Amino acid sequence: MTATSPEEQEYRRRTPASARCFEEARRYLPGGDSRSTLFYQPYPALFTRGEGCRVVDLDGNGLLDFTGNHSSLVHGYCHPAIAAAVRRQLEAGTCFPGPTEPQLRLARLLCERVPSIELVRFTNSGTEASLNAIRAARAFTGRRLIAWAKGAYHGTLAETMSPEHPDAIVLPFGDAEAAVRRIEERAGELAAVLVEPVQGSAGMIPASPEYLRRLREVTSRLGILLVFDEVVSFRIAWGGAQEHFGVTPDLTVLGKLIGGGFPLGAFGGRKDVMELFDPSRGSPVIPHPGSYNANPMSLAAGEAALELLTREAIAGLNRNGESLRTRLRETLDESPATARVTGLGSLFAIHPSPADPALRHRIFLGLYCEGILIDPRGVGTLSTVIGAEHMDRLIEALRVVLSRLPAQRPAEPVAH
Ligand SMILES: Cc1ncc(COP(=O)(O)O)c(C=O)c1O
Image 1 (spheres, rainbow, N blue to C red):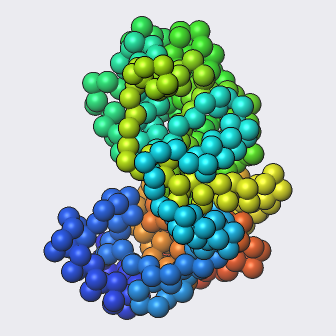
Image 2: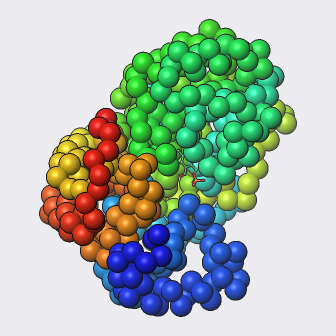
């Protein structure tokens, strides 16, 4: 169905160099790929350059980027302050066989911003940070089972990639009553409940404060650790989504933007839990080695990025996000497409009606051809270098793309 869409024909016409490169990459990489969530048909475009909120693909097409590498680049590409910090670190040395000052500085920044993080450790990705939060919860409670919410993504972890995993159970996302019941049923076995305060990969879907509060209450009551995965949601407030929702987890997982565009993850929280990693009093209960743990390039970039992410910057991002979501809804409502818009703060997503599975893909490719980059899954994020004129361009491009779609039958009303 998508094979012959006008959007795909136009995409192919504009990206022949990407097509050639992708074909060659298939000879060396399975499916030409190392990052499965970014694959899309007919082939993903390759990028060569980014500056501010603009990226250029291999064919020289310039696009306004509303992905920020999937929320990592909260200040856009090559922000001068981040680039300068990275250059300084590059000249000083990219990695060392010991701790560095950038580690101390970023740890201090995170602990100051997020009161629930009493102690923190650095990894190279959000996946590793989730993994280590789970290890911590298992060692602390002496239990093995973890619970995660349907639709969640916590990285490439066996336990949270399959609903059938023997060491994991899946909770409904949104239905607090049912989630609490499910937790109570397995209370004696559960080490941790993992939850994204705003589900990112699932389509920027915020939890309700009530849902998070109920998870907090039941986990405290039953001695289970509550872990917030704030890899995506951290940008919502100065102290992360936990500050916004007013719910305090035991452990927090961070990633993406805290590395300022470089690979970095962090996990932290209660002192009594995090001390299991402490090697200073003999062998740690949980060893956590790693050649590039706390690598100073990522830490230096992350420090610069967090310093730029002031309360004012966050307020501006959130205002823009609110305004963009409203305009996206209005634009979709005026069009033949049936879709809803979700998000919080500077996170947004367009969810085409399930009645038309091809629509998401057509919108994605259509926007690409109009010079706008969003995630193939329909999610997007704003950065501090995106202004009113860029959001105008997105809305205008969406209007053009939607105007080319055939009229649809009316679908059931959808909630925003
Ligand atoms: C909420 C969430 N947690 C964890 C991860 C994993 O982070 P990484 O890709 O750095 O391993 C992601 C990545 O998309 C994510 O969205």
